[in-house]
Image (cartoon, rainbow, N blue to C red; front, top):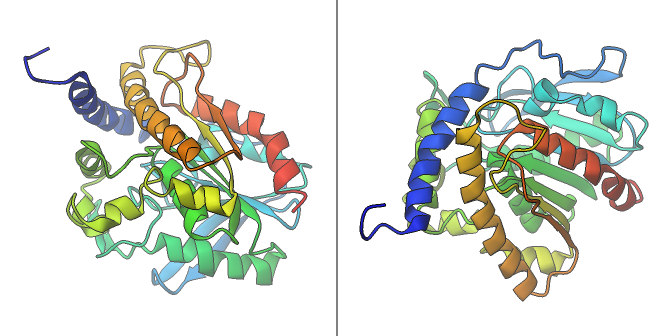
Length: 319
């Protein structure tokens, strides 16, 4: 290591490059993945109008009860199917659970927030108003058309959307009384994280983080940082579930996944900082699962979602 370069900075620089490699690999996933749930389940593909984004948003939906679990996608979210469905049989897991599933599609590199300016990337320009959609337009539509309560639901995010899930719950406690982060980036305004996010968004299709939250010193970065807003989650008594691996592989991961290992190592550091801030604020309604293995991949997030299901049924299903 060069003199004067801290281990943290070196890890962050390596992880920024790793995230770009990881993103390129995930983008190659097939639209006919064998992990998809079996075909006889009552899965619906809804087209939900979004006045704020000036288009209709495709939402994968499985009815199961009056309360729902929203599953948010990762950095390379696609417009056709949600990554939770592409990579994992989530609809099978939640069948007969008493909970409905809501999987929005789209939102590449969006962090599921309302952007300052239009999002230019992937050869086009889009209006990103995802917070408005997820907390106003979509809940109202589901209530009117599918009988889903607009309050007391759960939101679960992986990678990019892990921080978004916690922030949505912090700012909209009536909508989401339960929030889970799987390998989320939970200290986004600190240190090299704005640079990491910028590099990742560029790599995901040429998106620019200043159109999202402005420069690294803009208050919007802190406003969307779960560590900065941990006290809100405590005050709301939000039930939270936070998972991250340590970069070490287990039998869930095959092949050489150095990129996913490096990224998870940096992610874990941010999760530890969040945990400390949450507990310092008096937080006691959370599960923190930091095992001795686990990389930045869907197989680990799926295992956590299955482990979380009894807790979701207890907290959300009884709501």
